[in-house]
Length: 335
Length: 227
Figure (cartoon, each protein chain N blue to C red):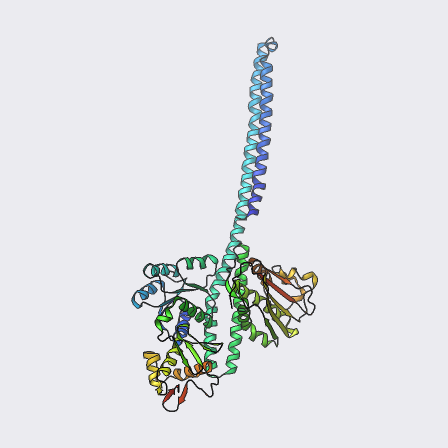
C-alpha cells in the first residue's frame, strides 16, 4: 500500500478511536470520582448519626449509581470502537481493492508491452533480412518500402519503451545504466533509424557532430530521448522541412541539441510540455496522434544521468531542445 | 564455429539461424531450456544465444547449468525483460552480455562479434590472422578489413572466401571449390547464394565493384585473385 491510504487509515480509524477511548476514560474517571466522593461522605462520622435505614438506602443507591453510570459509558465506548473499526476496515478494504485494481492495470500494460516485444523483434529481423535480399536483387522500391517498415518498427518500439518507462517511473524503478560510449555514434545510429521517416515527410536533416570522445552514458536511454525528440519534429514541425541535430563536448559535459523550424512552443508552455499527458489538454496537438509521455520520460532519463533536458528560451525560429549530460564520471580515451 | 540458439519463438529462432548461417557460423537450435542443456552437452558449441523466458527451464537456469561445467563459453542473453534487476541477474549468473528485444540483425551480429573479439575465440578459430589483398589489409581475428583508415566489416564466410583466393593467388578457384570449402555440405549447387555472396562482398571490399581487383570473375570457370 502506498503512503496516502495508510495516512488516511490513521486519520479515520486511529484518531477517532483514541478520542472515543479518551472520552470514555474521562467519563468513567469522573463517575468513579463522584462515587468515591459519595462513599467518603457516607463513611463520615456525622453521616453515621443519621437514621441507619436511610444510611443503608444511600449506600445501596451509591453502589447502583456506580454500576448504572459506568455501564452505559463502557457500552458506548465499546460500540463506538466497534463502529469506528468497522468503518476503518471497510475503507481499508475499498482502498486496497482500488490499489489492487490499479496495480493489475499497470501489470497488464507491462505484460502487454513485454508481449509486444517478441513480434516486434520478428518484424525488425525479417524486414532487415528482406531488405538485404532486395539490395542484392537491386530492387530500390522494395528497399524503400522495407525502410518504412523498419522505421515504423522503431517508432512502435519507442512507444512501448515510453509506456514501460512511465510504469517504472511511477514505481520509482526507472533507472539508467551508463556504460562507456561515444555520444556521436549513438546519435548517428538513432538518426539513421529515423532518416527514412523524416525524409518521407521532406524534412531535411542537418548534422554537426562534435562529441567524439568516450563518456559514460546509457546508449538505450539517449536513443530513446533522440527518438522522442525526432518524433516530435516529425509530428509538430514537419512544415519547417528542416531539422538540425548537433552535439558538442566540453570538459564538464556533452550537449545534444535538436532544433526545427516548426511553430515553436509558447513561453507559457515550455515547462508544461514536460508534464505527463500534457498534450491531451493542448490545442496545439489537435489532430496529432501521440501518448503525451515522451518528453516526460526523456527529461527523467536525462535527470537520471545527472543532466537535464530543456527548451532553449532564446531560440526563436521554431523549437530547440537541449540535452546535457555531465562528464563528471567520464572515461577519457585517446580516440 | 558453432553457435547454439535457445529461443522458444519459432520465427525469432529461424531468423537468427538464417542470419548466423549466412555469416558462416554453424547453428544448432533449441526450442526450450531442457533441449538447450542437452544440445550444449552433445554439440559443445563455441557460443550461446539464450532467451530468458522459455518453457520448462528458463534461460537463467540454463546459464547456471552451463556455468557449472564451462566457465568460458560466451553467453549472450536475448530477452524481452529489460528491468535493471534482470540485467544484473543475467550478468551475475555469468552471461557475457545482455540484449533486450526488439533488436535487429545488425545489432545482434555486432554484439556477437564484439563478444567473440573480447573472448579471443576468433583467434583460435581463424587461421593466419592477418593477410593483404591488393590495398586491403584483412584482420581475420577481428572480422574486419582496413583500406587506409576505412574499416570494412567481414563475416566468417567472407574471410574463408578471401583466404581461399589469397592462398591460391594467380589460379582459378572454381565455384565448386569455394562451395565445398566455404559452405560445405550446406551448399546446394543450384542455388545462387554463392554468386550473390560474392557480389555483395565485392560491393564492400572493392574500390570499384564494376571493375574488381580482388575477386575477378573468370567466365565459365570461377574466380581468381591475381595477387
